[in-house]
Length: 235
Image 1 (cartoon, helix red, strand yellow):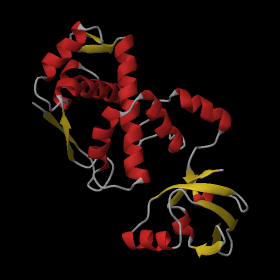
Image 2: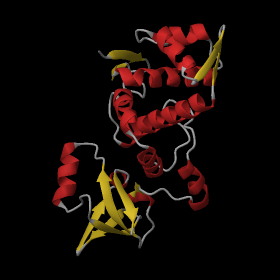
Image 3: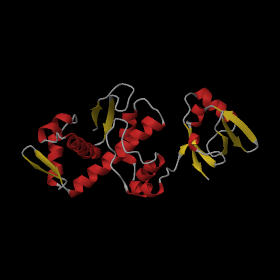
Image 4: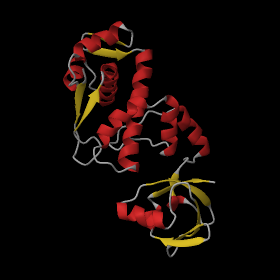
């Protein structure tokens, strides 16, 4: 059996109403995420958790989590115990990073539903890689804070994301194209025809009066908007 949860927000924005299919093993995770979010809002109570949970059997899941030592329930008060705190933090971090990835980087409608599915397959190593790829964002698209990871502490020292838009390069710098997020299929076709494809090495010649890049022996003038859609890694 599987369950569905409804995620409410503005249509076309992060958190657009969607249905996430939840296998049995993920129900506890969803409930822990709900508790973390309610605590952020200052409304974490037993009744509020049950009201916010649209899955079947929420009260039974809550009791199981308590018996297993993930949390403590006393009347209306709910407290995440150390291992529950750690698990909930990791879940929320994965979800909000996934949402940032799909909503900002890929500009997908229904980003919430994609993030809901994606978060459950991320290992800690991949989660840190996604965080680094995105430049260690402090918030999800809906403004909620993304819990920090070990990679974020390293970022404070290095202050450099792994991948950045071509527009961020300085004239004379070279980089490898990692991926492209074009505004249309026709634009992607034009870029591909010019050799602007993932894996290519590109050099930025100038930014003014227009952006000029070099691929091999070919020099190309491109609009600034296009350089924001080409993501590169310096070489």
